[in-house]
Image: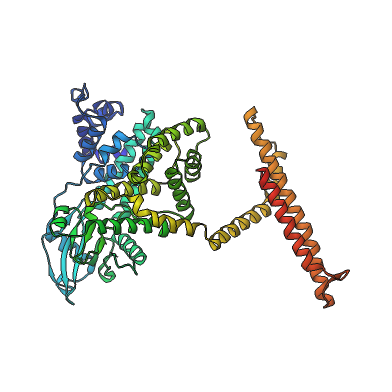
Length: 556
């Protein structure tokens, strides 16, 4: 309630925007009419039938300004949470904000640098190169002669964003009390993600670190370039980087008129993005045409690193497995990797999930590989996950949005090019790396280490369970389907205990032989045979046999 009183004027603006676009009933049901003392006659009695729900949502967000537009843009990446017809409208959201005055920009720069701007710059362009909701970019020339791009934060944006975030969270909390769909689509999660993303984006030093991290990925590349950062003049509200002369991909006609090799540019873009995603696991998440520039020598330049995604090594493995399964039209493979990538609820109907995956697979069954749109296919898969309430990591859905954007850019550059065709040699390299013996050995070592640690934890876990049982704190509810699961778990525990006891016993014997040998300073021989060496071989064979038998049973 305190939030609504403190920001009553902004709540009134939001209520008016909702009513203008046919959401007056929401304002009434959330109780905002009473709080804001709005006339009941302002409720829209009929929703416009000619305008879709998604379009009306988009119009509301555009009316409410930069913070809400950015919220909608982030929501458009969550195809795992929102239905397609809403996503299709949210991707149309554009920031329409006028530039702020050059006087305000100069004042903020001097405040951050602590010196007059003339002490650092030989010249400063008052007309901004670009303007957005959080800041705008000016060109300048350093005293040393280098041309630079200076990104300056919009005055008062922190206060505005903070206020709107507070209101958004309060309105979601109100909405959850009245509509089940708000919980179903986990709108609170989207708002929380938005809050983290936009607060990070407002810190320009974070963007500078992202730029340097991506620059390190292409340090030896002849095709891709990342502008250098000037750290001495970069802070949380001012970012200075190298100014790169070139033509953005949004000016496609100009690129064609000047005879740039657009096919080569498209190939560099695909290869660069695939390298970031699958090799580095850290990628530019907003590769739209305005953020991509081509130099005279044909080099591709990435710009604006406020939005990035990150994938762990395991997640990259699962993602490549998912794409391979999709290409092979393997339903079981797709299900397996989706379940590895996300958090599957207990109530998930696996048969219905399999049916939905089969239906999706049939859509791509007769489609030639070169016509497959990977971004669209992943988006469709994430949509299936959303219908079954499988929670996917936000970076994964951010990747799906980035690939969709990438494919849209490639269609403008060269409609005949296919991401699958360009990715084929890259995919072979990836598969070779994936099954590299050294990498497999490291994974096996990590798994064995994890297994041993789990075995060492078993006694303490057993004592904890015993203590809980002795205090009568265990409540058991069992149905027939759960009985089989319990028996399987008991089987696993007994196999693991057997495995650890045998290993422990043999280890004690071997340690005794080794100690005896070291004390007597003579090699341990039994009937002219080297006991320690033979013991090691026997132990190894026992471990292999036990592991084989348990794994074969499928109950380890």
